[in-house]
Image 1 (cartoon, rainbow, N blue to C red):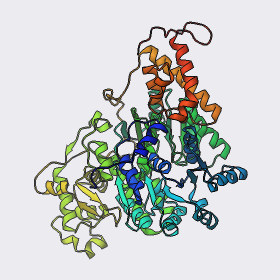
Image 2 (cartoon, rainbow, N blue to C red; image 1 turned 90 degrees about the horizontal axis):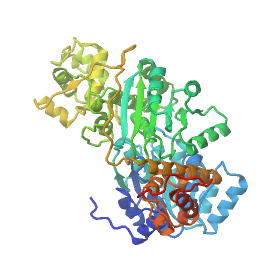
Image 3 (cartoon, one colour; image 1 turned 90 degrees about the vertical axis):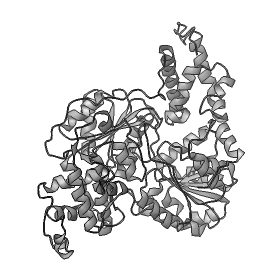
Image 4 (cartoon, helix red, strand yellow; image 1 turned 180 degrees about the vertical axis):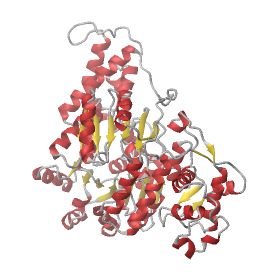
Length: 628
């Protein structure tokens, strides 16, 4: 550990005066302090933890220019719009701008008037741009969505590879790599490729306790989807599908049931895609039905759910996609359906990919890990976090905690698996271990001499699918570890060793991935409201609704998402505290000096009108006498 963290007063002042926040979120101070000390940084922070401030604040503390690398134009545009409203001198050079807009932006950069410059990796890593930047005082490179650097990450992008030469091209400028999605293998690969191992690494946890996790096998998937949507009418959400055709089909299905749903996929006209994304970002209650073409960098705080109609490609992809829900910290839900056809399709996708055999092997291992999560016999969050190397207790906010299924004592079978893994050297995958247990004298089993092990043929009472499911559940319950970096070998964890020595018990569920399996129609119980949830009185809710209408109007006038004006938390605080003066308005969460100048007048005018009991038509508003 590195001892107490001291953040310069300038950083605290910028946090308060520019961004309107009184305190840093957990982990931000450590990262910001390390950046300002000149270290190279790899920061793995969960979605909603405030990664952007970790480079935005240092950029404003330091003189000179900070270059931010971002993979998507939409993400750049949103961050630039949000920073400009707070009064920050920021520019973006990207393909969505006209040539004259990009030229004007560069002139401001060259003149030293811009503090942050956003670019895609392809535009940054040209000889011309590198030469131009080398003549400027570049103080920091911040690489967002840094898992794209790793060839073993879930979203590898070849153009990100070139970024690894930044440290040679700018040896005196620190580089900061940030991501919310990186398992240990990916983190190590980023650190080695980007920094040759010489970087401060911050892993600030992967837990998103406000998101309820639910997984169920497909039965009648359309009915399952519509039943879910009926429980979430009027809420913003994302529905993910495997194919473009299916996005169009589902958007039509939902629209036919009175749900405001829009499709989004890479095959659509760019203008229509942008229009649908803008509707989703600015209008309340919109549902986007999308392939994975939609999502990276989407920063809409009030997405209340993510629904997967098909199996994602890996645990990392799943984690990243569900991370788009509940960024405001309020309760949200991640609901996934999966079936045998999904698994077959995912296997085909991997095999059809134009990559080497080693890459394919790792992707199959990643899919195995996701299936283990789907089969998790106990707390789903424990299984998810253990994949990322994080320990957790049962969460009380997933389907297996809220609606526990009957578990069978599988200790005897688990001991057979552990024995087969141990005696074969803890380096073989599930298929080989199952062959040993079922007494199958495959060429590999015979060549390795494993047909002579005492455990050979000890599991003939179960079929191959049963053993595979049991092994997946043992991985999910942390009795076994899956070596994704290598050949997918199974190794025994500390918990597994304890079981081998007679300490503990293993309980499991029957395999859920069965074609035509029936699904319980019982609704999963919901947990009690969190202490962090705020229940508004009737007059407060009416005021909040009026504040949201004003926010949407101001956002549309500026052509930005509504949350860029104010997050819901700020509006909630206004509805509760009812500021009547500029001084009272200034202390609301998220209101810095620039937003105070731009928005105090219209919001105070609305609140004073409502709270005085007269609306714009001269009628009584019903708010008179409302207490704080």
